[in-house]
Length: 89
Image 1: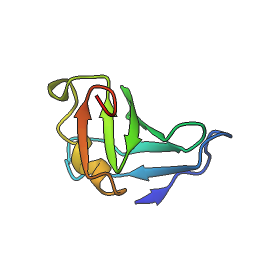
Image 2: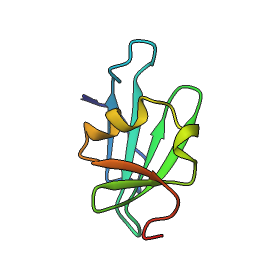
Image 3: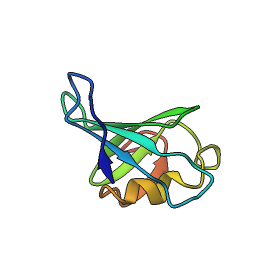
Image 4: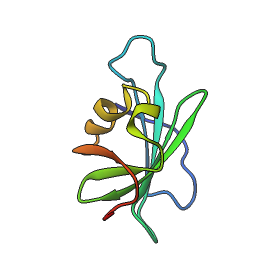
């Protein structure tokens, strides 16, 4: 894991991760804390946003619509699981 050089002004952190899948280019994970806890995963051709609650990432996409490398990649920054739907639902 290496830090990317610049982050959005309102982001808490920005991390570049090389997924373990050899067919996937490095992705950028942008972490926001205020006013909500959320992360944005930016790959070269897609972007996904997740709400975070108790180390679980909630996605508006169905799990089957997310790439297989998302959950193992997010686990590298402390996310325990990825779920579809809104947090607390």
